[in-house]
Image (cartoon, rainbow, N blue to C red; front, side, top):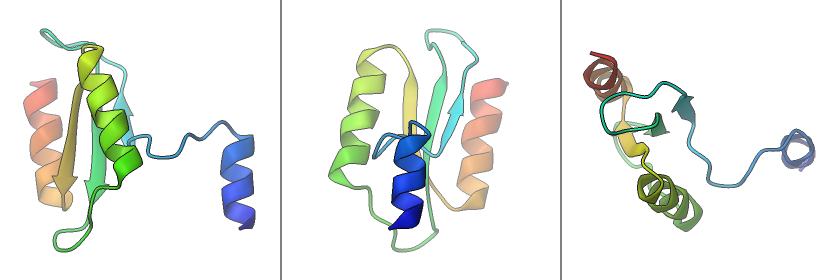
Length: 79
C-alpha cells in the first residue's frame, strides 16, 4: 500500500505504459511499450485504455512479451 501511495504522489497514472520513448519517428510522436513476461502476463483494462488513447493521439503503443520482443520493438522503432 505504501508503494501505491508513493507512486500516486509522484504523478503515476494507473495503466500508463512501462516504457515511454519521447522521440518522434515517421508518423508517430513517440513510442509506448507495456512490458509483460514471456508467458502469462495480461494487459489490464486501464492499460488497454492508455494504449488506445495514445494510438489515437499519434503515438505507437504496443505490448511486448519478454525481453527479446521488447528489444525488437525498440530496434524497429529507432531504426
